[in-house]
Every structure is written in structure tokens, then in C-alpha cells.
Amino acid sequence: LHLLSRRQRQMCIRDRNKEERNMKISVANPIYDSVFKFLMDDERIAKTVLSALLKKEVLSVEMRKHEHPNITRDKLSMFRIDFAARVRENDGSTQLILIELQKTWLDTETLRFRRYLAAQYNAEENIQKQGKNQGYALPMVAVYLLGHRVGDIDKPVVYVGHKALDYDGKEVENGENDPFISSLIHDSIIVQIPLLHGKINNRLDKVLSVFDQSQRTEESQQIINLEENLYKDDPEMMQIIHRLSLATMSAEVRQEMNDEDEFFAVIEARDTQVMKQKKIISEQLDKITEQQGKITEQQDRITEQQGKITEQQDRITEQQDRITEQQDRITEQQDRITEQNAQIKAMAQAMLKNGVSIDIIAQSINKSIEEVKAML
Image (cartoon, rainbow, N blue to C red):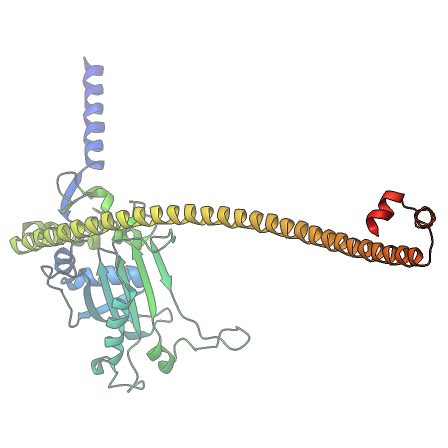
């Protein structure tokens, strides 16, 4: 009995540990604009997310003017937030930078991103008005959270940086940090949300894991189930999870999520209809192409037949030329014979006049007496 009780206790402990390891917590899906805005409104969380993305310590962050598009309008969703962040560089110095964060669910024309960046380049408020770099623009980093993949790139996060090089391709010392250069170019960070599959290898993976869409519940795509055990020893991540949990309790956020679902349902229906129409058009184009192929094939056959007919006509013309040539030769021969007969007749008539007998004339011209009589 004592051994059995001990086994039971061990089994209970194992079951409890297993339950703790598999404990799930349901939170709002941050891919929704409303949830993401609610999340990033928390300064502590904004610092956590931006620090992970930049791979630098963000000492302070201020949300500047942001654009939250009216999701009931018939246009593609593109959520934008501007941050002014003071970051600690690798050499220990601090720098104020501008972070342009743009998020979209759907495939979006890059022109939309470029227009927004152009507006930020032109904004007077992004010019430094104090310090030794006065008059230069704040260094800028563009962050793109994409709900779709970019081409064939299979990395979930892509860093696109710039380097200052000389003619020989050698890096120019301090070129990247020069305020003139940094005013005219910017680095980019591209996050492909569909490629987030729960693997946590670094700090950024851990922060972005809350965007992993493979963890959505079957009942509603508005909810994501996270393994709380993965984050319980990380106060910053627990703050994120707590904030996402609060989002599920906000009637305003839930309503905005429903509005987004309705909007994208319309977009999806429209895109489905467009895809069907494109498929129909593609099938029609295929049929037209097939018909054109058949017509081209028939034209080739006709051209081939016309070539054969032309060849036959050439042969017939050649034969007719030969016949004409032969006829000309026959006519020439007939003319010669006629001329010879006329000469023989004239000679016979002359001999007859001179008293030569018909017999001798016949012998002379190698004709019979009857032929000579007929000739005379």
C-alpha cells in the first residue's frame, strides 16, 4: 500500500507538471490593427518590441502622430505608427531616431509605403533643431510587419541596411554615422508574419511569437492560444501577454476587431470574385490562344499547299516552255521542208522546160514519176 501510494503521488506530480507545461492562455490576436494599437499604446511594451526589432536597447520611446485608417472604408488596411526613440548604440552613446512602423494584412503596393516614407522625409518635425547635428533629419528606421510573404524569401525577419563604400568597394570609416548620409537614407526591417512558426531561437523570436498565426483558435481567428510556461520567467513578455489579455476584455477593441473581420470579409469576397473573373478571362485567353494556334497551323498548311501548287505550276510552266520550244523546232523544220520542196519543184519545172523527160527528172530529184507529175 505504501508503494502504491507513492506511485500515485509520482503520477499526480507528473500530471501536474505536464499540465503546467501545456497550460494555454487565450489572448487577442495582435495582427488586428485595433489590438496592435492597444498593445503599442503601452510605452513599456513599445520599448520591448522595438528593442527586440532594433537589437538595441531602447531607453525611451514616444509615440508620435499615428494613422489608424477607418477600416469601414473600401481600401487596403495599412496601419502606421511613428515613434521617436532614444537608443543606446554599441559604443555606449545614445541617439534619437525615428521609427516608422507600418503593418498590413494584405499584399500591398510598395508605392503606398514609399508615399508614407516620402511624407516623413518632408516633415519639418523630423528635423533636428538642437545639438551638433542641428538642421539634419533624424536617422530613420522603417519597420514593416507584413501579413503576407515577400517573393521567395524564406526568412521570417529580414534586415536591410546601408553601407558607405568608396569606388573600390571598401567601407568608408564613419560613413554610416554621418548626419548628412543618415538624413538621406534609412535602414529597413521586414517581418513576414506567415513565416513565424513558434520556433524561439532568440529574443526577437520570443517577442514576435505572439504574432504566430498558427496558434489561432479554431473557433475564432481573433484569439491566439499561447503557452504561458514559455513566458512566465520573462516579466517583459508577461506584460505583453497581460496587455493582450486585457484587449479581449475591451468592448471597443472587440468591436473594432469585428469591424475588421467584416471589412476583410468584403475584401476577400471581392478578391475571390476578381480571382474567378481572372480565371474565366485566363481560360478564355487560353481558348483564344488555342484557336489562334489552330488557325496558325491551318495557315501553315495552306501556305504549304500553296507552295506545292506553286511548285506544280512552275513544273507545268517548265513543261509548257519545253513544248513551245519543241513546237518552234517543228515549225522551223516544216519551213525548211517547204523551202526545200519549193526548190525541188522549181528545179523540176526548169528541167521540164529544157526538155528533160519526166523519168530523168524523177531520177534526178529522187522522186517517183507520180510524185513528179503531181509536183508539176
